[in-house]
Image 1 (spheres, rainbow, N blue to C red):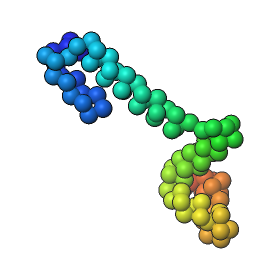
Image 2 (cartoon, helix red, strand yellow; image 1 turned 60 degrees about the horizontal axis):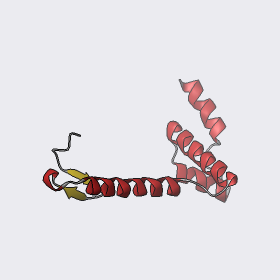
Image 3 (tube, one colour; image 1 turned 90 degrees about the horizontal axis):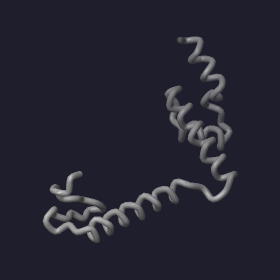
Image 4 (tube, rainbow, N blue to C red; image 1 turned 45 degrees about the vertical axis):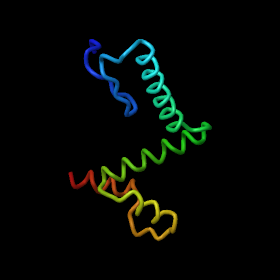
Length: 98
């Protein structure tokens, strides 16, 4: 960025002729605060929370790869209906078909 084009951060557009070091600094601060807020929201408060999040993310990715609805699989396990095969069985089945 050479300073001649308008800058747009957080929905605020400042034309090049009105830009000052203070305006640039304030726009950078706004963006840094938004980035910090995103980082905080993505985190967990405990090690157990991080492990639970990681487990569910892994489960969701595995379901997606096997063509199984994550939510249906989760409901099947919670309700203990076992209409959907367990993931290890589905993985074996997929490996045999490949």
